[in-house]
Image 1 (cartoon, one colour):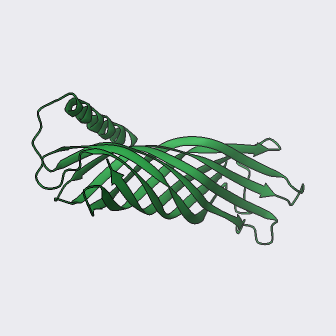
Image 2 (spheres, helix red, strand yellow):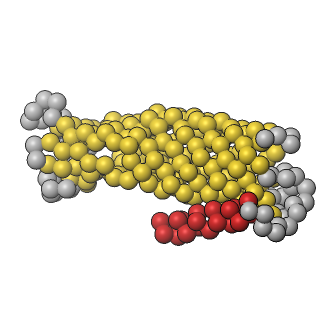
Image 3 (cartoon, helix red, strand yellow):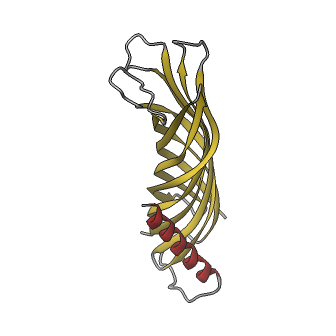
Length: 230
């Protein structure tokens, strides 16, 4: 999936570069999406964290070394990009940065009564993506994909033996994203959008007392936005 995503991103970027270099293109019919834009977006994120004990220490009496839990929260941010158009084909590049409160703390349900917990918090993330759409005048459905990055703090807390004993992973990590959306131009400058992104961020690790813990995080993002085209 990652290799396909990178290949698609590279393809769109090369097409855009060729068009910017005065390559021959088909004049668009109807609304013209070509141009730079900036905008804002608001939405909701549903995350999934998988904690893996890398040294085979069991989270439960049944020998489990992996624990999964969900998190969620609201988000909002800004985006900017540039579109090129050839006929009804619209392609471009977009950057965004999003503040978030996607978090949760849960008890270790694999050991009833244990004083152990797992937590995660994503407080911001961003993406750099290619977009490829098909214009139906002012309506533009599109697919998108590229790289992602963000700040995540995850932990495994075990107070059964030593109070405050915990493994914390507090890192800015990279990853990838893929998604789809639709945009509608209200005027020659203003447009509204609805978008879904799947964001998969690289694992981070924490440790204590010689035990290592891996935290894998991904997020399903749904957001609405408004953009102004120059």
